[in-house]
Image 1 (cartoon, rainbow, N blue to C red):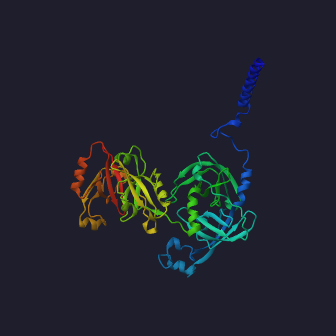
Image 2: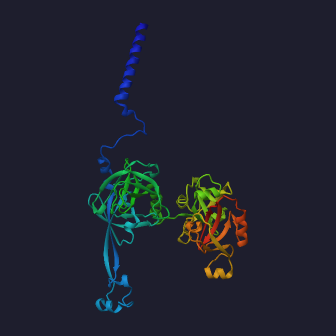
Image 3: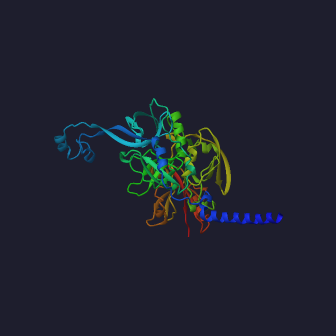
Length: 476
C-alpha cells in the first residue's frame, strides 16, 4: 500500500511538471507580470463609446472692430502722411465697423450639474457661448471663471437634467511615456472625433506661460480640439488638449489633470485662482554656476534677487541661496519652483531648504498672495564673460546711463568677439559682487579679481535695469 502511494505520488509529480511546462509554452501570456508588454489593443471602440457622450462642442460669438479705411494700419490715420488726401477722397470719413466673429472648440462635462472645463482661449472675449452635447441638444453657457496663466476656463450650462454624462479627472502624475491615450474633440467642427496615440513626454515647457508643465502626445490634435480631453485607458481625463505645433507632425500638448484639478476647484469656488508668492527672482543653475556654488550637479533654483519685505526676505532667504526644496518638495530646476509656490495655499508656513556657502540651511517662510503688482519676471543668466572695460559709478554716470545703483562698477564697454560679448554681458551692466564679495568701486573689483584662484570660474553678480542675476567668468 505504501509502495503504491509513493509510486502514485511520483506519477502525480510528473504530471504536475508536465502541466506546468505546457502552461509555460502554450499559455505563458496569462502569467505575465504587470511590466511585461501586453500588445497593441485590438480596439478602442468600447472606450470611445464610454467617453464621447461627455465631450461637448462649444461655439462662441464675439465682436471685432474693422476699420472703415482698410489701409489705415499700413499708412497710419487718413489725415497723416502723403496719402492723406487720396484716402480721404476715396474713403471719406468711413466709421469703423463691427463684425460678429464665431469660433469653435471643445469641452468636458465634469459635473452632473452642468459644469464644463475648456480652454480659456476658447471662451476669451466671447459675448455668447453655446454648448452642444452628444445627443444634439444645445444650451447657452456662462463663464464661471477663467485662468489665462494656465489657459483653463470653467463654464456652466443651465440644464433641467441632472443626469448629464460626465468624465472623471484622473491622476496625470501616474502617466508614463509610452502609455496609451485617446484624444476626443471637434477638429474643424467635425464633432466627436476620436484619435489615439501615446504619451510622448511629460513636463514639457513650451513657453506659453509661467506654469508650463504639459503632457506631450502624438495623438492627432487639430484646431477645434482645444478644450477636449486626453484620456487614459480607464476612461479618465489625464489632460486637457490645448496646443499644437503648426506644421509639426504628432506634436500635441495637454494641460495635466493634476494642475487642472487645483485650478478648476478655485474657479468653481471663487471665480478666480489665488496663487502663492515667495518674493524672489530666480535663475537657472547652469553647470558652471553649480561648480561655483559647490554643487555636484546643476539643480535647484538660484536666488538672484529678493523682494524687499516679501516672504523670502522675512524668512531669511538671501540672494545667492540655491533653493533645493520647498514645502517638502524637491526643486529640480528654476522652472519647477514657480509652480510649486503657486500651488501652495496663501498663509501657509513652509520649510525651505537652501544651499548657502556649501551648507544646507532651513528657512521658515509664510507664503503670501501673488498679485499682478508682485509678478516678477524669471531671469535667465547670460553665460561666461571677459574682455570688458569699467568705470566707477559717479553722479554723472548715474545720470547719463539712468542707473539707480549707487555702488558698484559699470561695464563701460565689451570688446567685439570677446568672451564677454559671446556671453551676453552688455555695456551698462553694473557689477555688484565678485565671488560673493560686495563690489563698491573699481578698487574692490580689482582686488577681488586678483584674489580669484587661477583656473577657477569667477562668480559675478550683475544688475541690468530691474533685473539682478549671476554669471560665471571662465578663466584659462
